[in-house]
Amino acid sequence: MRELKHVLILGGTGTLGTALLDYFKVNQSHLKVTVASRSEHKQAELKKLYPHVKFALCDIREADDVMRLCHRMDVVVHVAALKHVDILEENPLDSIKTNILGTINVQNSCIANDVPYCLFSSSDKAVDPVNVYGASKFISERLLLNANDKQNITKFNIFRWGNVVGSQG
Image (cartoon, rainbow, N blue to C red; front, side, top):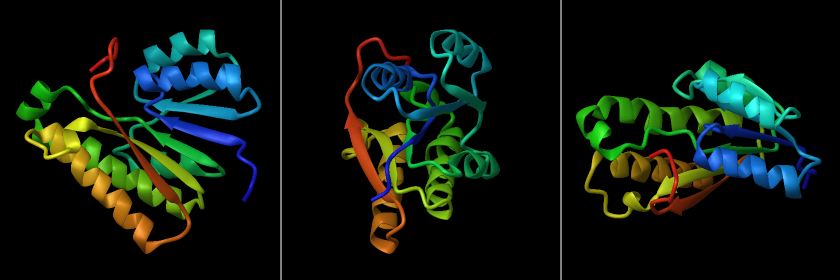
């Protein structure tokens, strides 16, 4: 197993991404961390707090963006998502584009770039889903689990969260 040196956090300017930055800063300071998100404002703010972190604008809906960023990564942490249940009920296509097709882009990019590990942030709403958000997370989980069965390049790990106090969604 190769030494883990490079970590990419997709959606890294959100609540979970920021918590990971705090953890890596204290406990894994040897890692080279790249944060990717669509929010230039949040990136500018975080860059002040984490000057040694690399920041990149990226939309997981764009396969080329994700492919480029996954190059030479040892771990990809996929915490990018649309997650406001009420908004996604009114905009199901956006949920599909970001939460499902974006996850497919992450999956394909990790495999194509020989990334050993990808961690995917799911939701307790993926269990017996009753809304668009839960369904999008359920499908994304199944896609990644299926990828684990069909290839041995990237190990996809899934972790589910309940509602997180103080989060943005």
